[in-house]
Length: 473
Image (cartoon, rainbow, N blue to C red; front, side):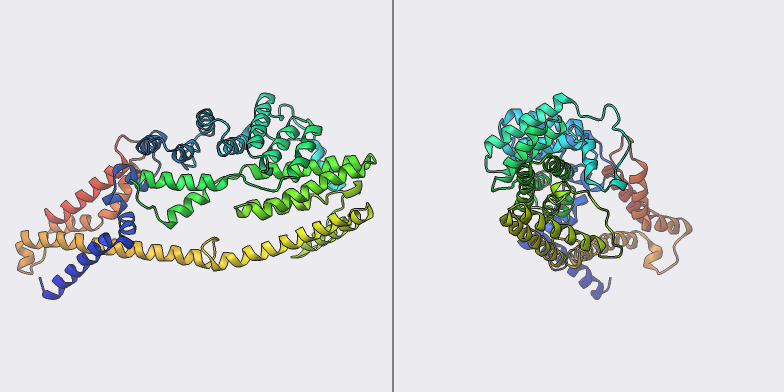
């Protein structure tokens, strides 16, 4: 072997060793070398095409046990450990058991309420159609059996009320109580809860605890090692927000209640409901820790204008790119005029300020997309590109070392190579198969889905067979 080649391989090995030793890069290098350097649990999550729920749960349970049953890890596990195919009923059952272990914990109660909004407690009210223009209202009657199970709704309301007692300044639980009452068709109680929510100064739906808990669990599964920004982003992107759609439905039902009160001649009762909608929406925009929460807050504020004073809803008469924005501005202006006409100029000022704040936040988020790692814009793609480049670099370094060792063995045991003679036919076939072993390994992994052979083990066997094919012939 020439001196130049020896220096190249020595330098390559030194790079790998340095990356594994230096504190600032060792965790990242181990992460990129995950299939070869970590335990079976991490390899399973990294390599397997569709690991079984039993394998997932076993890995998660072991990580939780090693932590001494840390609350955050148990909380993350109750969500299904972040695996999208986890059964909803099983996850809900886990969270209910956690609620029994940690009674009156607002974080757990908040999670239970979110889970129940996914399938168990829905607002299905035909009155919601009254907010649409006459030509867009549905004439189809509600199907039988669409109402949620009364027992589940009662349980939902009880949980929301316990959460509100634990965090009396937090509007989230009062909004969820209103949701439950609207689902139960107890409109008086729903309106009272909605107005009560508008009077509260805080908004905390405990989404960040879920994100942080799942990050902690990912690290625990990975033997306490860092998982990297890309894995963190993937976990965060998998967080579901089932509660927000129903909150908009609650806001529309609140607008219906306001409209009906105004048509009955009680404009002050209608005003109180509309003001609460503006307060709740503005509270969410100010204190929500997620972008989607901010957007929903904006939507709830805009729902306050629907059929103000009982006026008939009108269809958007405009067309074009900014027709919706133009129509929204006109509706807002009419609502401000309505508020002044019923003797509430202070609310007209507050609503105008809320709309201005909404426009500012939308502009801020749009700029943040391009300038931070928060959104899927330039900075995020730069991070992803750097990750891909680093992964390919480390993979290239590894393959350089692996093939150097393999061809050293081939050269040592092949007199033909030493004499610079052509390889015999069998050796050519072996060499061809060996060079293709990454593709063969991938095919083996895909073909063993559902079989008794673990996919990470199948991949390792295929790599070994490929290396043997390179050397033995």
